[in-house]
Image (cartoon, rainbow, N blue to C red; front, side, top):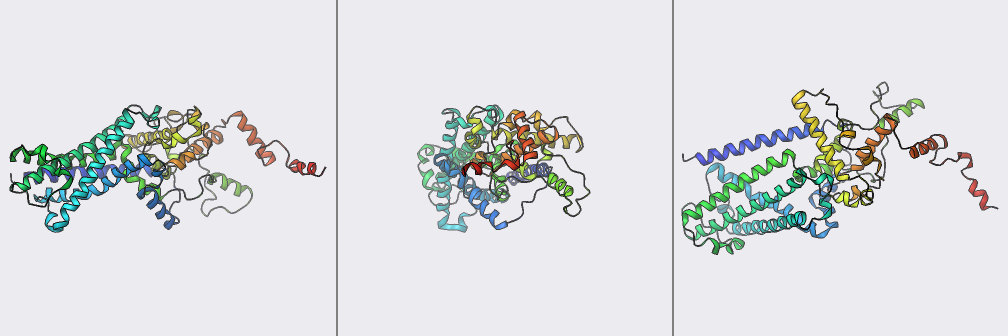
Length: 440
């Protein structure tokens, strides 16, 4: 019975580790369903991009207030979890504050930093809840933000508040037990912030304080393990981890530069008797554009998992602002939902199973993709460099090149480009007629 708490802790840690590993492998498999694209060049530029955007939160500060609040939560998440290492070691070996003798006089200062961040996280999360549910900031609303997405955000914020309350309660009762010379609670020095909470606990006897301290300890670590498992299931908070590789593999070319379709490039080269890539000259052309998630690139699919659902993209979209149905956030959420559905089909019915559904049609409508102006305002606004325009363009290409279903006004433009090498209906030979008028 002496080692029962350690055995229970080890079982919980192992179970969460198994579940998280399984979830990571599932997400990796789903992302690799996408088509290949080379994003391994220019490693120096990519590392700089990741450092500035993901680690440095550069694009968040275009809106200072939420950026500062988010920074507290972000830094708190990273720094406070250093303290989790001590909890894990204590849990495995039955020790208590094992780092205190190591850091000696520095230990209370470290705890004070953790407590400051814990209070900052608690206050920030409370403000975020008010902004979402009472003030009702417009960008948190929308057709795609009903039911689960709205509940998901509230669940995460509530869990973070609960974890911080557990952490602060644990330290407060621990501090009092230290001053009373209670066995097992070694003297580490005063904790500044929870020192203000001591009057709330001073009337309790030692057994009650030990119960609160133990409850806070177990609830804090179990909450963190549950939080980690939750994040890797079906939560937007997966961006905490995947934002780093997503920004590293960002598109480094100017946002407005459209990439050629390899299938079309190859056909044109063959038609003009130009050399094509080695080993690719006899391959049958693939599908033009994208109908389902497997037709997108692995980077598109990684971006779907990286979406924070913050709505900055939709709030900057000119089509959405003028009442069109398009929401770049919904494009990314639909892509992720469809990808998860395809992944479940593979697990349950095999990789060759066809469910008769597709991303275009069953999730994203033609009306949505045709409303896009390709201005890239959504790409510029995204705090983790997601590119919804790339997905929209690939869906459009499928609709036009595979199904020949372009708007009538577009067909006229396409015909002019084909015959006149320009979007206008004038012959190329008449293109410089305006110069003659200047000489008259």
